[in-house]
Length: 269
Image (cartoon, rainbow, N blue to C red; front, side, top):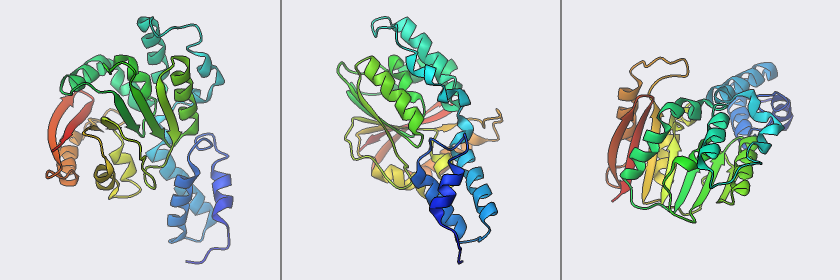
């Protein structure tokens, strides 16, 4: 279908919105191009792209994430004062739905997962949101490295400030997983509550990303209920779906069910 407008103009228009201004432009461009195949109505395209971006990413954010004062949150703390660091991390994690939902089970979540793993000295955290702030609850090896990726640059700025303040050997980088995949090597890959979001754009996204994981171990999770708190049989449906897209010839699969999250710990054969 022919269109008489430039996708770059639509990107600029969409990214003026508060919910989208820090988002990866490549993702926005990808959705615009898709919409342009079925519509030549500029207003309709902008509306549909905004709606999809909100569903897959912006809905999980609290607008307070954009507050510059958040970067000063750790100014008076040291890594040795773990209780104070954890308290501040929890305060920040409330600003993202994914980590906020995990907070009541956070200690049990990572204790259970890491008890089923060998010593881990490097992590890839994909579509991470604010999950790197959970590092104080992860029993990682001394001098570990941590690479984090998300579509929002402001989240990556906050995580990099966290890494810098506590001299964590890590880097947070903006990335659209639908188009790119990090080439960094790591002992453990985390992909938490992300596949359902990506598959709203590309139904094969989950299978594609799983095929690109090079770590010996990976933790893949799905929400056990919707943002509104409804279960809707989600764990059963997501388990069936995961078993369809995870190659059993490549991975050994262990299921762990938490009240708010369905986890698959997978080990390369």
